[in-house]
Image 1 (cartoon, rainbow, N blue to C red):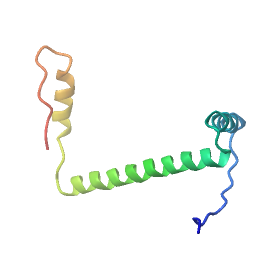
Image 2 (image 1 turned 90 degrees about the horizontal axis):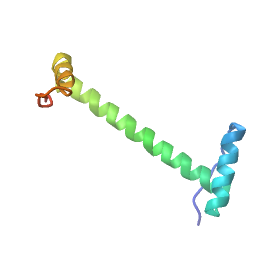
Image 3 (image 1 turned 120 degrees about the vertical axis):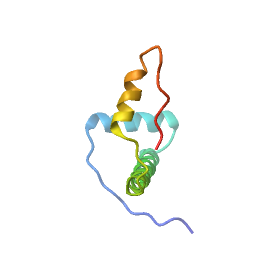
Image 4 (image 1 turned 45 degrees about the horizontal axis):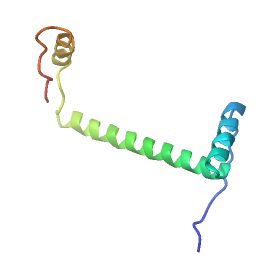
Length: 89
């Protein structure tokens, strides 16, 4: 038994559609396969970005932050003869 599917339709710029077609031909795959790969990669990336955002917000709520002035001083020191150690929370 196969995986259930749903058809999604999107209007894309002609240049992007042509690149998808070229890639499909080069990989000897269908356009649909290329689109599924691209969409899956994008969804994974956005899920990871969301997870990292929630993690960062939890750090802020817990007070695990670094003072802006400490970060600025560290950044300013990077081009000098005596760079500071990176600040820690």
